[in-house]
Length: 460
Image (cartoon, rainbow, N blue to C red; front, side, top):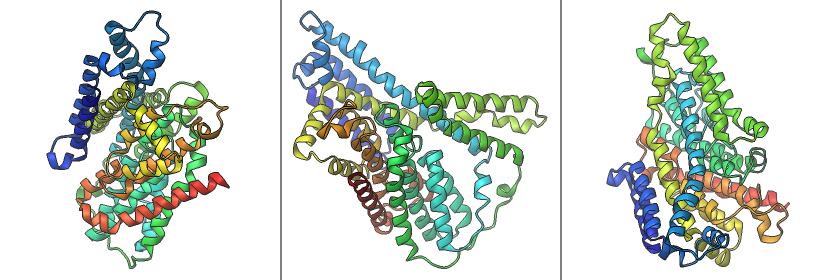
């Protein structure tokens, strides 16, 4: 049963990776993966835990007075392990739900239009730099997925040539992933590490900003050497140029939404409540404001912009995907699979920098969320007074900070390696092998340069 759990996880993982081939939504595969894995764990708990690989079971069994039996094992799995992991998972899910809803509200109110209208240049190189820097910092405030969607949509309004749009989209993916890596709310993986207590908001910004910036600026400089000329902007359609939402509302919602997002770290620092509480508080205020605004508005057409309608457009399958995949990883963590893997990495590799570079490169092939979840499950947070190898695993230790960088930026090497890349691929119909030929080497150069930067800053 121990091996069967792993086989089910691998099969489910392959279905997720091959989503575009098998035509099965990754949320469905992830949910099946998560629930089936826990079911096998429960039914075969006696056999699985008797192997002695589960660190949590070994600790739990020392606290009970009687000899473990089937009822004790079932109690451990259903009343101890499942609620414990579910509480952590739901913290991430609720955070994502709140953040995605706030961003959806800003988008529906055309708040991002206030930013994109400021871009006037037609020089390709200058525009590339403006877009890359805007994407880098915007993804840190919002998230890399949303920023990619917004910026790719912008490029479709600015660039007519498909090749140019694909080049810009490739740099947008790199910049969005780099920008999301150094922000506690910019990428799901950093959110997971932040909520899990492996990193703090201030520390991740301080330690990862420079490597992330390098991973963006190196590809940007390299690509700037090969492109030249000016762009020709397409004409706006009648629908695109129509002023539907008052400018005051666009600006107000943009400011209110961004304040709600960036206030989350502040809320956590002062209240010590989980980040999802701050995110839901921001959503509540935004929802309250829009409902009051509609109550005093005489325009009935604005009522379609109420949050209770907008929330229906939130990407629910993505949220369910995270719920499923994180549940499956939690089952492997509880049963002891990840303890075996962590021991193998420590024994065969040992170097935290090499381990994390490998994790980042693997994340370009498979999703970085379960990789980070696995890493969190494999290694415990060491005590503040830890020394030697263990010192890298204290809160804000080099392992956790470098993991945030590698998992956040490594996925840019292949277009299927990150949510931002998949979004750009879907929106622009970018060919996998075109990206591999034109963008992958840029992303790899940036990724390794940023990794080298992080290593140098830790030893100097």
